[in-house]
Structures are given as C-alpha cells and as structure tokens.
Length: 504
Image (cartoon, rainbow, N blue to C red; front, side, top):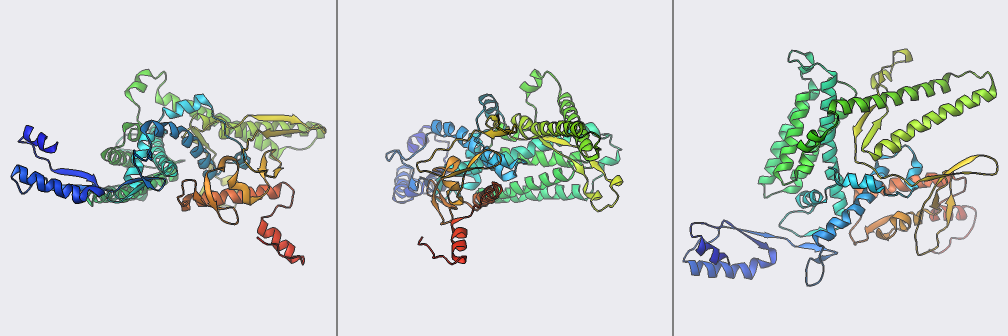
C-alpha cells in the first residue's frame, strides 16, 4: 500500500514508518528489502519507530482473544470511577466530620450531570495524561487498568484546580488592589522572582524531556513541579494582596502552552478562562458573581462569630434561658458547618475558614491578633451524601443516623458507634466489605491490601491513604465504648494473662 501511494504521489516522501515491536523482524526487514529493490533506491524510509504492546489483565491486548476495551466501554466506565475517586479524595483531604467516611455516597443525578460537562470530568484527557506520563516509555509495554486511569484523573484535576485557583486569585487581586503602573503593588518581591524563575526553568526542562526520545514521564513530573510551585504561591498569598498578577498570569500561560503542546483538549487547558458562549449567555458579570460569593461568605462569618461570642461570653442568669441560648447558638454553628461542608461543595465551591494570622501566634496579646477573613475557592463538585434520618429515643434525645448499605457474601459482625453508622468490628475486615468489596485481591494477615483486583500491586500513594483510613476507623471503634482490638492485640492480651497461643 505504501508503494502504491508513493507511485501515485512521486514527489512525496515518507520520513517515518511505525509499528509494534513484534514487527521489527522479520516483517519490516523484509519490507525494507522488497521496497528498496522495487523502487531502485537504497534509502527508502529513513526513520523507523517501534512501540511496545498494550497489556490488559496481564495479557497483550488482542481482538481475537477478546482482551480489549472499546472506546464506548471506556467512556461508560468513567462516571463510576469518578464517583469512587470523589470518595477517596474526600478521605485524603480529611473532612471536618470524620463520620462522613462511613456514609454511603448517594449520587445526585443533576449535580453529577453538570460536573460531567464541566472541566473536572474529561476521561479523554485522563487517558491522554496516562499515555503521556503514567504508561512508561513508548518503546516498552504499557499496562492498562482502571486504577491507573483513576490516578491519571486525580493528577489532571490538580492541573485544573491550579488553573481555576490562579484565575480566581487574579480576579480577586484586581478587584481589591490598585492596578496603575505606578502602584507599589507592581514591584516584585522574592516570592515573585522565585516563582518566575521556577516556571522558566521548568519550561526548559520540559522541552528538553520531549527532545530526549519523548520522555513523557519526566515532562509530566516537571509540569507538576511547576504547578506545585504555583499552588504554594497562591496559598501563601491567598489572604493577602501583595502578590504579582503578572507573575501568576505568566505561570498560567506557560502551563497552558505545555498542556496544549502535548495534545490536551481546550476543556483542560482553557480551565478558568471564560468561553465565548458563557460570556454571551451570562446573566451577571464575573465581578458580580464574585461579589455575591463574597457577600455570602461574609454573612456566614458574621453569624458564626456572633454565635461563638455568645457561647464564650454568655453569663448564666436563668439556667433554662441560658440553655435555650446555648442550643440556639449551637444550631447556628451547625447550619454554618453544613453550608461549608455539604451545600457549597456540591456546587463546586470550597469555603476556607480564616482565623488569626501566623504572625500573631507568637504574640501574647490577643488584642493585637490580625484576623484573616474567610475565603472561598473553586473545587470539583462533590456528590451529595446519603439523607440523614432523625429519630427520638425513649428518653427524648434525638439521634441522627445515616443509611449505610453493605453487601457481602460472608457474615460480618457490626457495631453501632455514636454517629449511628454500622461499621465492621474487625480491622481485618475493613477493606474486604462495603465500598472496598472486590476492589482488592490479596491482603496481609492484618487485612491491609497488597494487590488490586486486576492483580497489580497497590501503589504507595494508595497504601498511605488506606492506612490513614484504617487508623481513623480504629479510633471510631475505640470511641464506640467497647474494647476493640485487632486479632494480634487480642492474642497478646490472652498471652499476657497466661493463656495459650491459638493457631493461626
């Protein structure tokens, strides 16, 4: 076929011929010999590229073996993986209410549908990121698995979060600071110079990695280093307005240029930038949206401060009246927390409580504390938790419980803790039931997963999150009021009391 095309277009020359590593010899060797003899040339195609095979479930992808995943199947699988990833990310960041870890996340169809059409959900770009930096060199084999796709999605959402946070920071900075050229705010400080230098150096290293045999792994590592430096800069200057808009714009621009270079879609590298359609259809301006969110955050901060002040400074005059005031203030604080932890995250907004600045921590005079305002930032929309049920026990006290569904083929002893959620009483069963059922295939004697369901080893990053989850679960068992121990701790207690060691 190549020879036919060359004869049809005699002035066109092929420069690169590619194929799988299994075609290098003898297929391509014979093809070169036959083509050079037929075309009467000794330099047919100068460059040959041979790629490694794609493996699924430990075997080479093959249509004849039915060992493959279609594009349609891949795209249909991603919403389920996305929901599971939301749950894992909530555990990693540590929600204020630890009891949420044991709640079954119920998908809200409307919020999930909107998140799928947003910049946060893009399985195609997740796959591109996996091909770029998580699948190894193009010369060697690559192993496809849903866990690797989930990891790629997590990394891509970090990129999107930086682009969104950066643009949001710029908008807030412009609204609250003087923008004239002669303003002292235009002067760069050490942080500005350091970030600018990091971005410039990172851009050079990223290009060098691509020139070095398309080293996508190094390219991605350098890119994430640039993004981490930018994120640190944003966190440091989040509550202040002494940063440089120009430096942040430069950082975002270079990040977008690199993303565009390696093939990401505008849905990813245009994150944070208003599209033409959204600008034309906008009912209110960006400035008005920011002002509305600022007003909501300020209102919550005021109500929360009043409640805290009353609880701290209230004087007991009438015991019954005092209790009513305390209960009322606690209700206000509970509503304040629900707005921060449940309502706003479902629409993609993370509220950050302020407090005293770091500079006041070493000051012994509380009157001199510098109060840092509460702020907000954009985040991936999170699915709503299961609806809570409020019941009244015979004593008149109300108890709030959350419906938790657990499916398992074996009988597992459960214990009700103070939050009302049912949890396994044994740490060894924690990662074998519920949301973790059939997720892992091998475990240690203590019940810690070592291999995923597809046979691949559990990554160090995932293992760290699982151990954190296990520690939190152990604390809940202790808080339930019972004497909960692991099998090893139980046996050690038996031996200490003079008992015999039971066989494993």
